[in-house]
Image 1 (cartoon, rainbow, N blue to C red):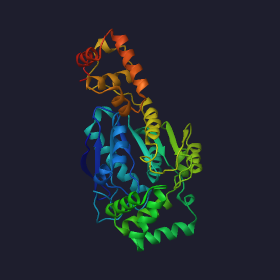
Image 2 (cartoon, rainbow, N blue to C red):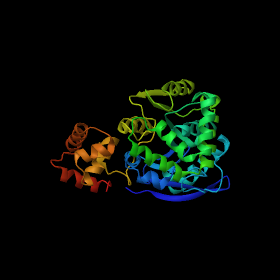
Image 3 (tube, rainbow, N blue to C red):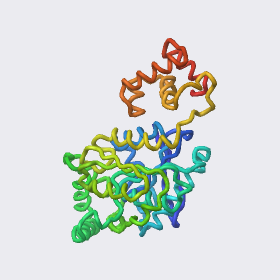
Image 4 (cartoon, rainbow, N blue to C red):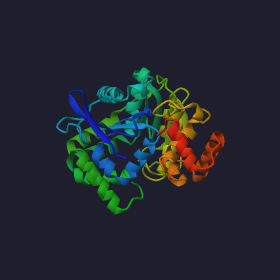
Length: 354
């Protein structure tokens, strides 16, 4: 799987955004976090595996905030949530132009870390554009992330000594990582943003406050948080879930704040199952009557069978166990009266799946 990078304009700056996954799948927009780089993220094996797992069920849209990554670098990052929302809205509008048929009822939105605040505000102020909202590692008030003295000290270190600051942040974001991985992440941060931009972005992370927005969110909402997150305590995620009417809170085991580290499969599974409930995967063309008896998940599995994937490969793509995939394949063959995988692949071709 490869990503496609495009550009749009927001708040007077050029914003880079990327897509991965079929344009026929529901659009999932991942809110921008404080420091990213579309190309460098894609070169990170763990990050790419995380994004590709999501892209088996969704058309995944990511973007670099102004001042970072492939977006305009000679501009300051968004100074407040109003401008963050303007950037996200520009990306949502640009992305839906390329896949309007799958975005008529709004996009699916995933907010990660500080991107969760942006996603909450956007869902609260643009309810017609958000079909479902998932949050990971979230918080509502940046003042709760650390004592004032610690927030001020870290921001000052990042601004004055970006080399040291990037290492401090690597220690914070990568608990238990070895020195090589921490060095690589520190280098990634320095390549993604200048010291000035990084410090301003970090200050904005601490300044975000969406407590009043939580109760205005009307989209079905899922809040996922690792129980022992070393960067943002799980108690803050629970408070977010408690503030959004009808939200579901799902605690996961682990200490990692970055969702693509540790047990990333559990994160993908929780988010994907929730979002897919409101965005059924549809085939590229209308199904034939022959396939009408199949469930949405069986259609997904049959499409991959027809593409020549084994049960183990399908399990990895759909974040299922091989046993579950084997059961789906057996059910497909029983429903369609088929005796082999080759016959199932032929049925998929006749039915418009390939």
